Length: 261
Ligand SMILES: [Zn+2]
Image (cartoon, rainbow, N blue to C red; front, side):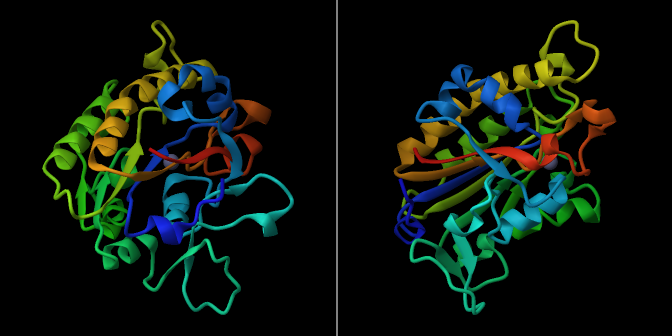
């Protein structure tokens, strides 16, 4: 199904969820165990524009979402594109005349909200205020962060409070950076001492279980266009590599889905 973003913007709420650090191979392995994320289809394999959170999210907010992992880049229809660049754009692409999609959607009347997760969203130091500052409202609590084993539950609870009191007539652009899949995630497997593919799989199952409530709350408000993507993967020792902010296929391949709730 081809999405025409010009039919979405203005009529639909938009929910953008980044599953921070989720590897493509891990997401595929857990498709059957993720009824909320994969109830209407499986993950698409995409290439991320950034190898770590800061780079990837700047690109996303600039309208550069992950691109299909194939050699036919010309066939990819972008959801968002800056207006008046001189480049040819597809009629299904929504054009924004602001520096980024967040302020572009605000200009269309959207209320823009960021619920932060990993360190680049904590607002504790100036650098960690940059990504949240794209939004009219941004929230971060210690309980939303990577060290809390119930972080997604806390993030979703906060979102539900905001959604519950939101004006039903104003469209929402709700962005959430889910931190649970990022390291440390070993505590999702009892007894595990180190992060691994297995512990990341367990973290993803936990996250899927929590996102159902968020999707329900958005459905109750009306039509929602949902984008779910990882920002980058991570290496667990492949070819000697550990972590991300490096170029390896376990980092640049990411799972991506878009669907109407
Ligand atoms: Zn990240």
